[in-house]
Image (cartoon, rainbow, N blue to C red; front, side, top):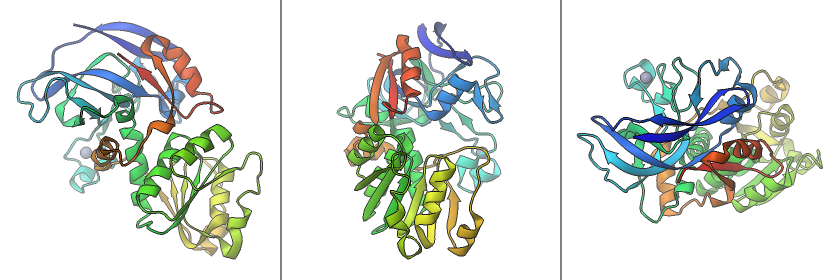
Amino acid sequence: MKTRVCRLYGQHDIRIETDDIQPPGPGEVLLRMSAGGICGSDLHYYQDGGFGPIRVREPIILGHEVSGTVAALGDGVRGLKEGMKVAFNPSRPCGHCRYCAEGRPRHCTEMRFSGSAMRMPHEQGGFREFMVVQATQCIPLSDRTSLAHAACAEPLSVALHACGQAGDIRGAQVLVTGAGPIGALCVAAARAAGAAHIVATDIQDATLEVARRMGADTTLNVGRDAEALHPWREDKGRFDVAFECSAVSSALQDAMMAVRPGGTIVQVGVTGNLSIPLNILVGKEIALRGSHRFDREFEQAAAMIDSGQIDVGPIITGRYPLEDALSAFEAASDRTRSVKVQLAFE
Ligand code: ZN
């Protein structure tokens, strides 16, 4: 059997090719892929050939935000059947390392994550028509659920995990800096977790409009007005919690200034070195916590999308067929008009 795939050979070198594909083995499932969201990491692979120390060293099929329908079952697979819609969990922790044993598989030392160039050989991803996966990575959905929405289960699980890192946020005043896909989903996750008031900041009006539709009460364009957050600095800061999703120094500074003493900043956006005002961190006893991927939140995210508890629709700003992958990556690179751009495989 054949499948078309979207393969990255290096910086700005994407090719649509046709591969042979084997039938699913024991415990495996053949998925007919439906939708695949382009993530910031996919964009870095495409634009820069990688990020930080992680480089594309061999051709790789990108994509870890994908969904599909079950096309065939391998031996011994239970709980799934042909034609079923599924959200695909791209995490494959080893199950026996120290962190897996501790119940924190997101820190697995042998993690295999779809569409990642971290390890050699690279872990191949889901931007393709058909893919053979482990049955355990498939979360069944109801027939009515949009597979485009289902492909947002992965970024939503990142946002749910970030929310969990903040503790109980019921009744909290929440700041979200950076209204890209993860920021917008942090808004929705914070809303679902019972936040009282959510302020989102960005430097693009288009992304802020999406954040508003995802549940932000107040949106501020800090590109146009650098002092827009100043009223929230009163009394040493008025936010209980901030989700910093931009990995931009000025945004972290803004969060530091506007979070109350004893408040929490969850750092979700990733970059290398960035300066931190330690005097404020210390003086206000701010808890600065990182948030890395997700564990059980994936099932929770799939369920929230499936039940309609969170409507991820507003973040999807573009859909392109596999053949137009290049246009899709170019659109995804343009923050003035794009939040989440997806490839459509059927
Ligand atoms: Zn492990």
